[in-house]
Image 1 (cartoon, one colour):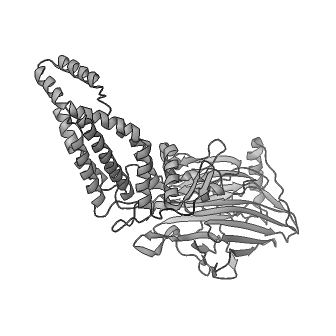
Image 2 (cartoon, one colour):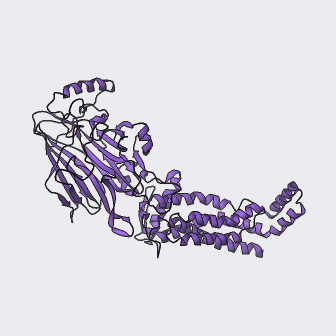
Image 3 (cartoon, rainbow, N blue to C red):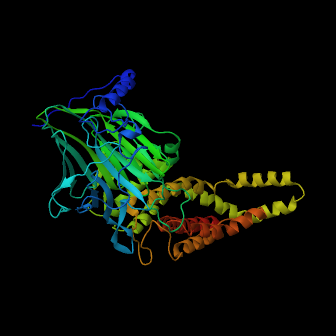
Length: 561
């Protein structure tokens, strides 16, 4: 039978004396995985272990820098994951995503999220520490497996078991459980205590990453508001906390709470440990300056297994795309790693509407609906989204265009006032204001729609930048990826032409300098938009064309009146 875990805690004011006593005792304890003064915390103590407690801390790291040792890596393939497990330590040292090609033009080359090479380190580690733990700063255990390669095939679930027999007779099974269609992996340590003494240990998990650039960030174009690269974690006070690499260098994180998660976040993808939510967890960080590596870890509270009994402890590991619905179902706050910035309250409904137009599925604010089908093309969905947004601002835009049409109509009268009072600026301004009042013209009315729609524009930018659903999403013809710039600059040029046409419908500013700025504005915007995501330029172009049509009709109507 599986024994219920016994949980003990040390009072905070007694932690240090207990650690000192344990270090002295462990030097002679035959069951302890320590050498010299290396510290392995007692499972009965609930405290954050020091760097030397866990492999990969400041003192020692026996994870090899290249390919797996001890017979080579264990290969695992599911329908959504390809990974390699190193028998030494039983860690995931390489993980790729077949459903997400590295580049759109090479669909047979999957994006590699985790890897451990001479040029890049990004691995997921886990094990047991404590009096009877398998891991210590002195070395990692070598696990055995029945097979060298595992395939999920048509099965719904795949278990990969790594086994180890300790000196005291306890048998440890490290089980990786994969489910079809899921990027979430359950890692369970099963302890069969065949010894005559109580088994004591703690489960830990950590993500180790170097300080290199984000390999998932597109090299095409530029990002005025770059995506976040760094760590994140959950706390009871705040569901989403960013922890930049620089912050990890300045001060180590140390927090204890029930449940939660830790994650390494990058553009479109993330890796995260989600330990048992029913247990107290200690979260901490370590920065290895000599290697420029960052360790983000959790340590579960101490556990015991009585002689002759079997116990389990587990954690879940997510490695894959930042799909909000999936992440939200895994753990509270994990979906917030899809970071839409300070305009998230606009970006979320825009994203939900965009998904609805593309797929027919709507999920927002607890509302779930599926009409069965959408347009099936993200570019077409962006065009339809533009129509919806334009409809929402229709009345405001109409008021603005009516004001600009009146300005255009009274332009000759304004020119007469300037010439008549060119030596008296104050009189010129007074007469101009009287003209505006008589004709009921708001001189700032033309700017209002642009100012109101700029937050929508920025929010859509975040949606296109952060949503993995639009990664490598094709439109038509030469546009094969809406999340990167137009390779032939066709959309930016068309957008600039539409802006030029729109300026022809606007009244000419009275100030010569301002008139020159407005004249060059389409050119400036066209150059600026050359490197923006094609999807964003498509939105702006569609919006301009709709605005031109609306403004032309209103202008002609005012002129006829």
